[in-house]
Amino acid sequence: MKIGNKIFENRTYVMAIINLTPDSFWHESRKTADSALFAVEKAIADGASVIDLGVQSTRPGYVEVGADEEISRLEKPLALIKQNFDIPVSVDTYFSKTAAFALEAGADMINDVWGLCHDENMAETIARHNASVCIMHNAKQRLSGDIWGAITGFLANSVQKARAVGIAADKICLDGGIGFAKDREQNYELLNGYEKLSALGYPLLLGTSRKSMFGGAVEDRLPQTIESTLLAAKKCVLFVRVHDVKENVRALEEFYGRY
Image: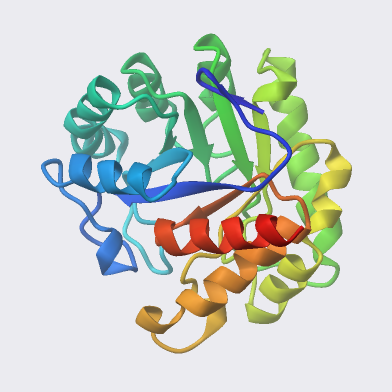
């Protein structure tokens, strides 16, 4: 997969979560415009291959902010990151207005938790800027029955939408959407069978970092997160999106050192 001037293939890479929000569920990931640059510098030093900037919390029960607020959170940090570091930057948004601003300011990828379905102009915006995209499964109602048909059908439809407007095949990855429109049992079913999504023909991204499916306090969920990262590596998932870069990178290095 291509993101910016980098090509990713043949292993699992770490995408670092940098949240520019005051209300993300893991307090350690919340950064201000002034602290974000130091957080990115540390993530790179710890082995991150991609930076993912969150400008809106999507935790359970979150209160939505609009595109203008997202842009105000994003403007200074994105400019500083692009000026100081040569690393692909993804922006987590489902608003095409935010996406257009981010891509014009140098971002390389849009991570859309609504899989190009929330904003009718999103796919075209990404295509116009020749950018990459992560398409995630989501739904307004919790899934019931067979989850695989719903997830793969949604993702296939979104991929078709992306390809129809000219987004290159090698600039697309897919995310099954763990924690979105799924209960704990469904999240584990998805995680344990994640490789099934590879049948759609695109690389995968897994996002489980410190999520509630692991139970207990958010502060205590790192071991389960690392277990899921190692499972992702075994299943040939291309990216894991995590809060704790150093620990997940170390686990992957040990994994690849054994195999």
